[in-house]
Length: 103
Image (cartoon, rainbow, N blue to C red; front, side, top):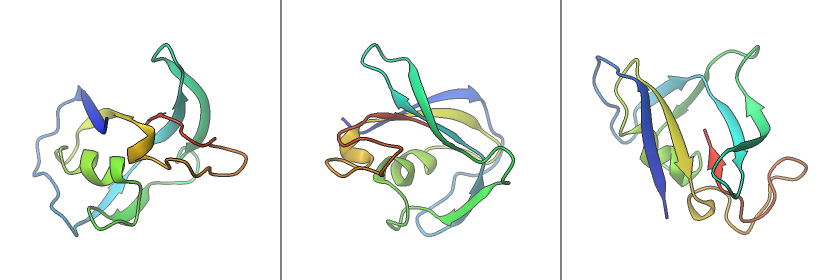
């Protein structure tokens, strides 16, 4: 349970610390029972990067804990269990309750 980071491309800068503002591009998918990517529920493609303070509860716990494991410039996939995502709550029309996510 929690978040598992898989590095796609190494970064070469520092890792963010709690409270740092981070800028990132992402695509989010529901995770299928076989572990594959399911329905895409969100993406910054065409909207521009997403900015947020990290590690302070402004985003789901999986992002708060996963992004601080990354380095500046790194590309990674975060496999996030439902308890580190939206849990029993849903994001109406996009994310059902108890959904695992891939970001």
